[in-house]
Image 1 (spheres, rainbow, N blue to C red):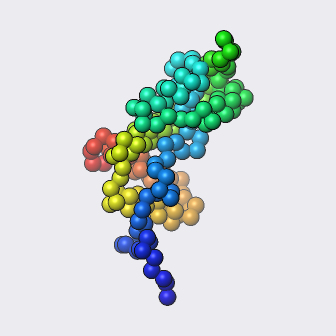
Image 2: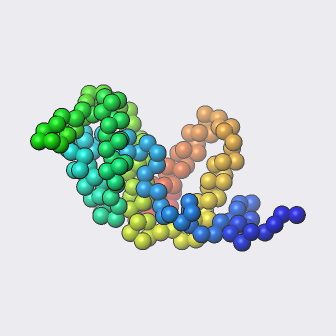
Image 3: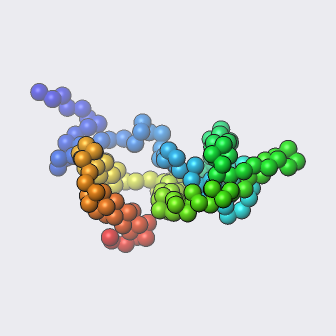
Amino acid sequence: MREHHPRHERHEGFEKHGGRERGGRGPRVFAPGDLKLLLPALIAEQPCHGYDLIRQIESLFDGAYTPSPGVIYPTLTFLEESELISGDTEGGKKRYTITDAGRLFLSEQTVALDGIRLRMDVSKRALRGQDRPPEIHEAVHNLRHALHSHHGRWSPEEIVRVAALLNSTAQAIVDGKNP
């Protein structure tokens, strides 16, 4: 017999979880790897210092989120070592510019960058206190469950179909329309 746990209950074939995601820490602002794409994109728009990037990202979130230097500077070092950006020291501060390899990288990653910007818009609203109601939280959990139920058995056609469905749904949510 399965023990009933108040935070987990079955609902229409899916588990229903109470509470917030990831132990109540609040929404994740960036997915792994997002900054490795966002920082070169910002630098491509205008060469700048690390501190300027922190302020630009803070501005993109309307002041609701400020990335820590402990996240930004190691990422800049990685990008510089990967030759996607270059840093020139002037007045004791490094000014970063995009390299040709960085421009090529960005041109190959436009879809991923669009996804990052979309997730940033969603995160910005959540950080401003417009967090998901329980019904939406449950629906997101159901979606994750459905995606995990494939257990890595994705045909190329199914990948294209599901990705298009998820991307159009995400855009419709942002636009306030039905897909």
